[in-house]
Length: 269
Image (cartoon, rainbow, N blue to C red; front, side):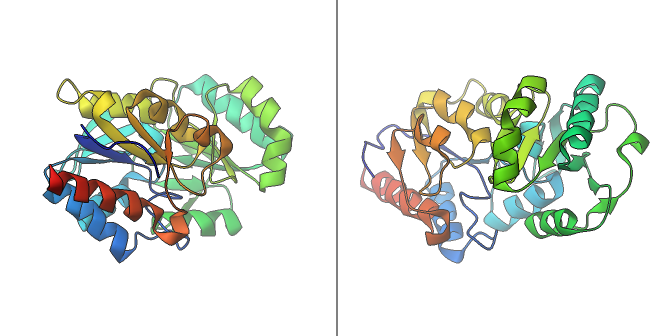
């Protein structure tokens, strides 16, 4: 790890592949490091693709009382009051384009509303989503969801299948971003982690004073806008290209490593 941590006034973190380990849980060490940052008086903003319900539980578990973002930034809410600050759904044309890709390319499809995660059949995709978010996944038909309720859609496949399909997916839905190697995530163009972070920071904190940690393609835009962007040791190449510093692998508490360094720096100034 190289580079100064001088001037850091806030921390923003992705969850899976970042503060969550290989078991998709936040380790005791990483949780302690996050609490150390909070105890030093800095906000810790969660910017994650996880569901609102999952993020609410995680924020409360970690003692985070500032606002956070779920569903890849389409939902921003206060975890203390359990009150939404911003919710932006996908448009009907975007939903139709993704359903078309699902059928044309044979990829798995999951759609998310404010309160539920949906798939069209039981199986490995439903099991993975339930494990990641620690909540039940509902089975249904996307046509049965009322217009304006879907906040996120993901296409699922093997890394090899998504590599092969990437060009067509991005041609038909340009705002799609790759996450965890097995998903392409889509939210409304103006409902991203980057715009969520802008809302969370407001006028109080300059993005130049933010330390941010991420690993996936859906972290690129917001990492590029902040002053202290950090790539996880397991980060995708597009993240490495926009970050100025690298920490350890998420399976080895890489997030804790850099956050502990930050806490030591804050204690020394």
